[in-house]
Amino acid sequence: MLDEITISRAIIESYKEKLLAALDVDVAIVGAGPAGLVCGRYLAREGRKVALFERKLSVGGGMWGGGIMFNEIVVQEEARSILRECGVKVRLYERGYYLADSIEAVAALCLEAVRAGVRIFNLISAEDVMIRKNRVAGLVLNWTAVEIANLHVDPITMRASYVVDATGHAAEVVRIAERKSGIKLDTKSGKCMGEGSMWAEVAEEAIMEHSRQVCPGLYTCGMAANAVFGGPRMGPIFGGMLLSGRKVAADITKKLSAKK
Image 1 (tube, rainbow, N blue to C red):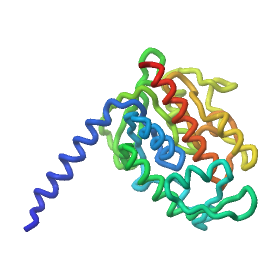
Image 2 (image 1 turned 60 degrees about the vertical axis):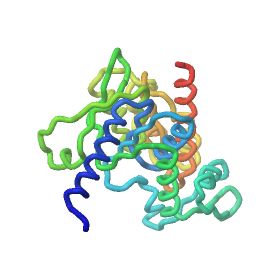
Image 3 (image 1 turned 120 degrees about the vertical axis):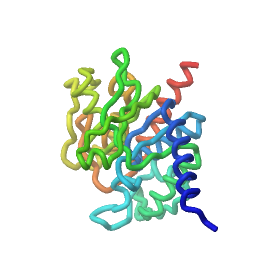
């Protein structure tokens, strides 16, 4: 016979162990969209301890809806290999343009990240950053429901060697660091520049340049990168998002290896 208390105990004990293990990691990623999932997967495959925090119930960011809720996504030649690595069927539309089912793509990216060792925590928001010696050194976390309900409930803190802002257009973590810490960002103005109007060709190139460390200990990838550095948005093409996550993972892996 099934016992409800045993079921509850199993969930609580298991989650507690998972959360405790995520309080001190190599890399903390905020935002489980395509860029965050890819970044986490590549880091975890290199043996890095990675925790990924997503404020919503589901992962995947805007990829689920493709363009105007037509659940197909477009990627370019350079990025299709990342989807293929994850087992996603990629079809040629015309030279330089490839299609994939957005539902399959999100499901595959999430599954591959988890299988690589990424610990994903949904329904958790990063409401602040931890600063030590003028460097981002971790996150301050709370339940998203607490934020929505505007309850006065104190958060918890976790430590990370590096933090990655993959929160999309809002670039929430970078904006928090800028606003609350006084840290000067590595942008032309020293502040978050904000994203420009849609221009897919320029945005897809700019995102690779902008996917980098924006201040000590804090990286940005995905649409957040263009939002931080003033690049245009790219619309419903996702190749740059995937490549951005891979680039940041490679950069952080090199830095972590150099510390040994």
